Image (cartoon, rainbow, N blue to C red):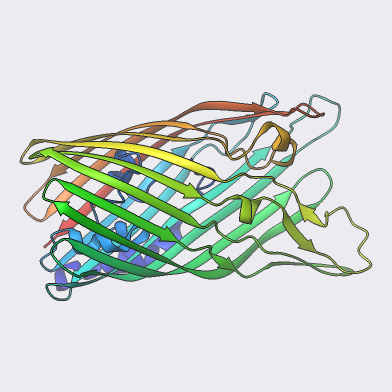
Length: 386
């Protein structure tokens, strides 16, 4: 166990090195590790690494761990985005993540993971061809630490749960008002199960509760402005099939409840407040249904390749474009590829690339703004399994 102490310490440092992420299913990240990204996010039924503690905690009981597994990684996200043809600055972001799992006995497994799971933002020097500076700058970051467990009820059924300890940061600035960078904390839970009706078939389910966050608090000369922005509830179902040794196919469907947390967000203002901050933020996000398909093939005893497809209709419709110039979360179609190579009996390296294809949405009410986004995401992962 002494050999993995440096890796455990590195996991604890991730929070200090994390930077903003711009996600791809609405404001949610598709994966937390290179293997998850390589499968297009289809990992509910047949998880590949300890990162499953963040997505389906039951999965840590299905990894074949004798003593411990550690998965550390980072990625780079390049999200070119535009509003009315004007390009946003700051087009490169780092995405750190890490997770570990321990075998307590033949049935009980403990784990913990940390990753940036959602985020969005822009840095527009201008968004309007009209005279004058129309700068818009926003930053939203959401990070999660999840200690939890997986438990084998039988050879066919595993269950698991994790506590979600959340950190969220937000800043909003537009031509009419500025809300400086603020940070809050919150809590939630994740629970899941994996059922194996046969050696070739696995069924998985995972539920993420709505993440209850403390309110953002901004002081003004007339009193405090407060706003609560919770994380969305999610429900995912997956089925994985192994038609032959070395070949895995998984299909998942996920529901993300954006409308409950990013539909109409109330803003508490002082009774005599006369500033420009509105009484509510009418983002108008709709719930999103995400479909993902992942294929994994073992080429030889040391090499495994992956490919993934992911689709989710933009939660921002034409009627809400004007309220979302600072959050261009409109990508829908994603394609990914990935590779894992065994370096030794205990160490593996994984690499993935995902392309989120360009998508634009134009307002159907004046002013007829257009927002557009595309993304390139590269992830690297080092795994240790004993």
